[in-house]
Amino acid sequence: MVWKIIRSLTASQLLLLVLSLPQGRTSSVLTVNGRTENYILDTYYGIQASLECAVQNHTRDEELLWYREAGRVDLKNGNKINTSSVCVSPINESDNGVSFTCKLQRDQTVSITVVLNVTFPPLLSGNGFQTVEEGSDVRLVCNVKSNPQAQMLWYRNNSALVLEKDRHQIQQTRESFQLSITRVKKSDNGTYNCIASSSLKTETMDFHLVVKDKVPVIPIEPIIAACVVVFLTLAFALLSRRKRIMKLCVKESGRNSETAL
Image 1: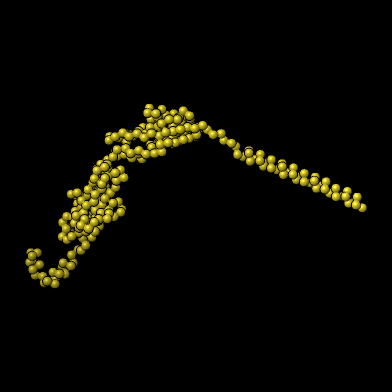
Image 2: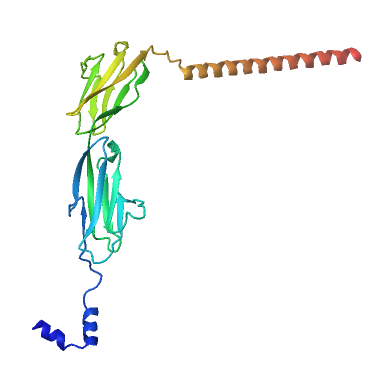
């Protein structure tokens, strides 16, 4: 039936029929590493990850675009048409959670996003040497990156740290493990060990704390007040002495005038 209708149409009528069909839509499908949907790629620290994007069901050559987060990846010629690959090598901790998106250049609503889930052992950093005065407060900050998240502990001189309720406080975020000590004592001298344990590895970083004697504080305000008093006393004394000298000079001048007469 449909064939009979088509045969009865003139060439011009067929052309108008084709032009009236919906335009701008694509039936092309993208795959990344053979997958047609967004997904999370589990990978490991130090290895290489390759992502290959390919166009399926295309009726003409299609140019592909790659984005790392919001930034466009610069692709070489020969790595853009119908298939395109990006390589991350070597993978490190900063790649964890980063997204890579492949898009059709002609219709960028057609895309696939891959998010990297990088497994890596604990990585620790921080200020390993601190000097403070006795009686002051100090904070030891152990920066930590780990996937999976590490279990954290503080030791002192390689033994479990005994926490004093009123002086020690521990705070933990996803990327730091902090030990705060208030009213530091000389006995707080020592090496504090930040220990991070995951299923991959246990890492330790040492923080050396040196407590020096408290420097006596010289009161500045009383000294300034005393200097002002001394200055004013000297000023008044000099002024009084000046008046006396002037009076003596006047008397001597008067005597000399009488003698001359």
